Length: 213
Image (tube, rainbow, N blue to C red; front, side, top):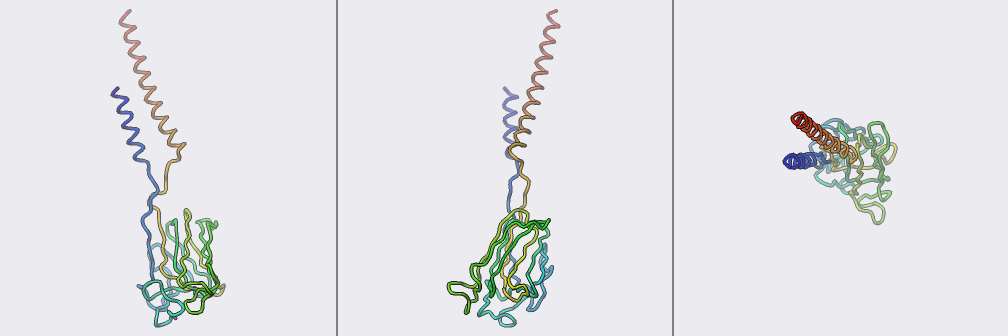
C-alpha cells in the first residue's frame, strides 16, 4: 500500500514538472531613442535592421501624412525592402505602417523557408491623401514558430512606407514532451517498479521454500 501511494505521488510530481510553452512578454521598439537621419542597424539588442533610417516629426518626417503611432520617430524603407533579423527565434511580429504603396510583411525561418505573409488592406493609407476608407497607422501582425527574420516590402526602390512600434514575442520554453513520449516514460517507470516488486516476491517465496525444506 505504501509503495502504491509513493508511486502515485511520484507520478503527480512528474506530470507537474512537464515544461510548458510560455512567452517572455512583448517587446516594443518605438525608435524614439534615436536621432533624425540615424541608420538603424544594431542599436537594439538582439535585432539587426537593413534599409532602415529614422525620420523625426517636425524635421524630416511629414507627420501630417505619416503620423507616428507614438512619440516622434519612425523608420522608413531607405533604398529598398526593409529587413529585421532576430538573434533568437520569435513567435510573433507586428507594427504600425503608413504607406503610399502596398506593404507586405513576410516571415522566414533560419533556413530561409517562408513561414507566412500578411499584406496591407489598401494601396495607400496616408492620413490626408490615402485611399478612401483607409486609416493611418495600419497594424500588421504575423505569428509563426521560429521566426528568424522578416522582410517589409512595398516599392522595390524604397521610400514608400514608415514603421513605428515594432513589437515581437520570444518564447521562454520551447520543448514540450509529446504525449506518446510521455506515455512511454510513464509506462517504462511503472514497468520497472512492477518488475522490482515481482523479483522481491519471488525472492521471498524462495526463502520460504528453503525454510520449509
